[in-house]
Length: 579
Image (cartoon, rainbow, N blue to C red; front, side):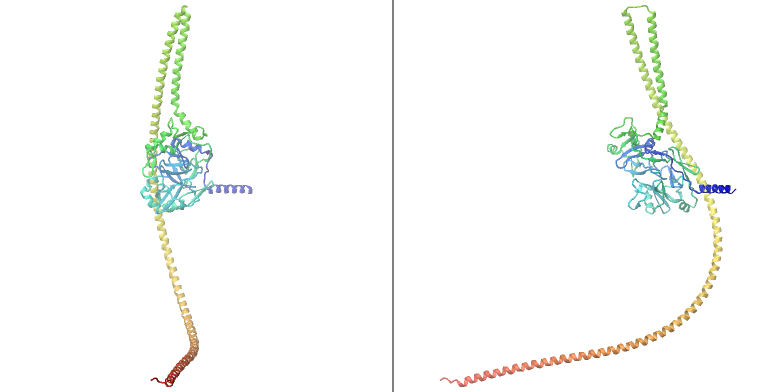
């Protein structure tokens, strides 16, 4: 019994783990990149680009833009996944990168890693924006040094990001730049097979913005290339693991530079005018011509086989079934000619057996006539056969044109049916969305009413609590004020006492400083007086000495003058006078 309980418990745990684990489906099988070349050949033209090698130019209508035309976003366990309505959408929107060429328009560069979409995301101002990533952009690198061109971006209101009819809400091109300048990048990423890619807005963010739950789909692997579709709760998509093959190449590839040189005015698309349908058709005709121009078209005979090439061969075989029936008619004509010749030979033998023997000249003449008749019959048979072949060729051409017309009509009918189905589904979804919105509004109204009552109760409780808190606060404040007044009185008394003490100390210090300054002033005055007296005495002494020198000089001068006068008088008195 214990063992049974243990086994039962383990079984329950395994079931819980199985239901709790995320519902993911991993890619199936391996193919080579030859699958891209052969699988996309019926839907576009391969061009040899001098910078990126073999790139694919899709046969699409005017206004085509990757991750915008004929498709919508679905939230999956891998993030926002692009669901394309194109038969070939499994490859270019989940592998490789897109870029806009100023001559060929939008071209796809093959890649080997699968992702729900190779795009960059932005948000802001009530809008989401997304743009295809160009080749060479690493997800681990910031966008600071890379500026995505304006014409790459597609913008839509955030409320419609999960709508299957999102194309009805795209922002016109002339408003995209303004919106993009008001948004910021969304850096949410997801890692799959050790490869990181941008997953776009999260489901809870979309739910918060739109106010309604977001369905998260599972990824279900499709066993063959087909249009991506949603059934039940799964996105069905073909997503094999792709390996690089050294000898993989398109069956036919256009030399991009050579074609552009020979057709400078046959631009496939440009940023302003969009796609030129006539020039695009001309490119396709040049690539698929029965007698391709070797200067422009390169035919690759030796290339590996792929699943897509086998499917294309089966399609061609079915297309040639009517041709085979025409060949069977021609075989019947040849058999009739052979039977006619055999009957003529038998008649000749019988005639030779029944006719009597004639001479050699008659036999030779008959043989010559029979040869002429046989040649005439052969010529008539050849002409008849040629006419029948020409008729069969015309019939095959007419049947091929009829099949093409029927295929076009069927495709148009299917497109119209799909459009009507999408319109009906859209109306149904809109009705469901309206009902869901009304239910949600009613639920929200009830919730708001319940919340309002709850808020009123909470407000009453809060008011009572606030009143009690205010009373307690007033009591506390009164006690605090009394305590503060007492403390302030004590502080003031202590401060006054401290101030009086400090004043006494300051007065005593001031008096001592005044006495010191007075003593210093007296000492300086005395020193100044003594210096001045010494200067006066020195000046007096110098004046006295100068006066004494002046007196002495005057006395000496007077003495010398007296001596000169005495000498002159003495010489005058002692000299005799002349008669």
